[in-house]
Length: 310
Ligand code: NAP
Image (cartoon, rainbow, N blue to C red; front, side, top):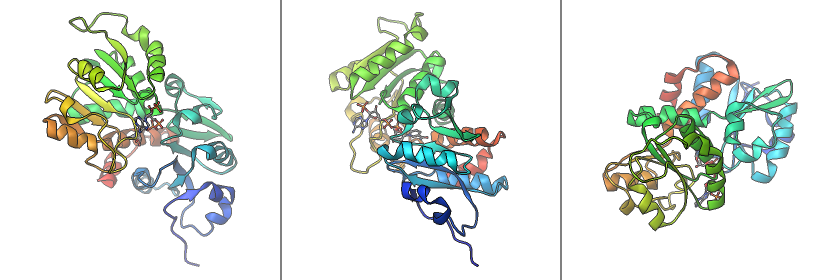
């Protein structure tokens, strides 16, 4: 009998009837990404290229899992023969509360972007922070520790991971911005010990949580080198840029964690301001390569994954 290709995306109902949903597949699905939305995710093409290259006979699929379905989806995962999954918007913080164990990277960020299964237990890690560091190095040829960084969306799973990584790197200065200011303030309280020493010249504080309004952003951006968007703003072509062109200057490096569309509203705003801009494709690559190494305890074929994304 002819074997089937996997479908574009699976759902919670498919996980419930997994044997039926995946009957006669050419290769078993044992990895995937849970998200809502998830159709944009390029993780399957990148991870499937790596699996094929390494001759690992399994596939990586997309799963459209809504926020209120995460607990059930994770429950089914424990019973199925999965190696693990990635988690994307909006699951990273909620999943942290629902896994069985968390490693240091996940515990620090209070968020998980990847899970591996061991003896029916869900073990969570976070590769977003390290993936971000590598992306900044490859996009701008600089190290985060030398930069004054602004993270917009500091209340979300990705914003937490990025802010923690900046603190661990002892970056020059960190400004946390969030629509719900209280969340940025709570994160700043956790990170304060990392910024106790004086490092920046001048009167500005090394760590601040500020409201998301134009006057506050304008005042901060004079003392910022790298601006990071860690909100989902930009995923829809109709989204506004999280920072308007008029607030950007040519000395800014602008990094959008969003990678689809490739010219996000923020990257376009950076272009218009004469600043250097990059979308999140290289962070996707690096966090995905780190996930692969954790699942299979081996180096990821990063060049193959990169080529698959391009
Ligand atoms: P999340 O946990 O749902 O985070 C949402 C964050 O964005 C919160 O800080 C939230 O603010 C803010 N936010 C949401 N909608 C907003 C809006 N309309 N206006 C202003 N702020 C808004 O999501 P996530 O998992 O961290 O993902 C965030 C984005 O990063 C997604 O687009 C994801 O695709 C991208 N990402 C990319 C990579 C990569 O490898 N390139 C890796 C990770 C994530 P409140 O706290 O006020 O709600």
